[in-house]
Structure formats: C-alpha cells, structure tokens
Image 1 (tube, one colour):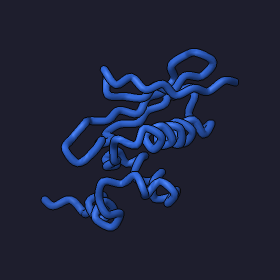
Image 2: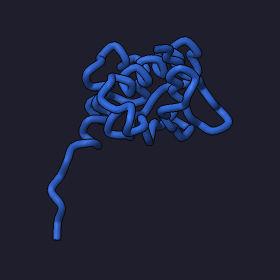
Image 3: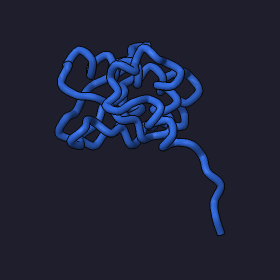
Image 4: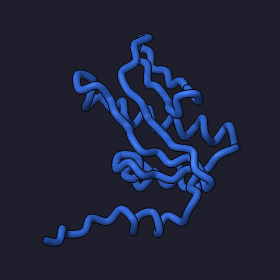
Length: 110
C-alpha cells in the first residue's frame, strides 16, 4: 500500500493518494494570519484505517519544510489531531488556548 500526499496550491488543498488513487483531502483557506484548515475528508470506504492521521502528519511535515505559512485549525478533525500531537504546535498562527477556546462546544440556545 503506497500513501502519498500531494499539495495542490491552485486548489488550496492537499490530496491523499492511496496506490495512486485520490481517497482524501485537507482543504485550507489562505488568510492574512496563515492557512485555515477548514475541511478534512477520507472516502467512507477507506475510513478507520488511520489515513486521515497520515494525511495530516504529512501535510504538517510539508508545511513545516516549506517554512512560509502558519496554521489555524478550523476543521474539528484538524483541531483534535493537533491537540493529540503537540509537536505540531510550532506551526500554529495563534496561541493554542485561544484556538481550543474557540472550538469548545456550547449548548444551543432556543
């Protein structure tokens, strides 16, 4: 099984390829303070195999190697990935506590 993560800057995303087939993506929006990761997805037939984690691991390795951008996790998966992997916190555009506070679940009103 061959896993590859390919950056497609013209589409503002990273594609996850499994044996050459696109099976997932991490989508970002470029903002003034960094790349806001807004969506992460893996095909339902490929879920629960650790592929989303591998996708984000390789995305963050590429972002770090490039050295040009910081990260703002917006997508709930990316937030939880970064929470579980403090070694990624050097990539954050904002303080972790601020990011985590913005993601806290609050009861609905009304």
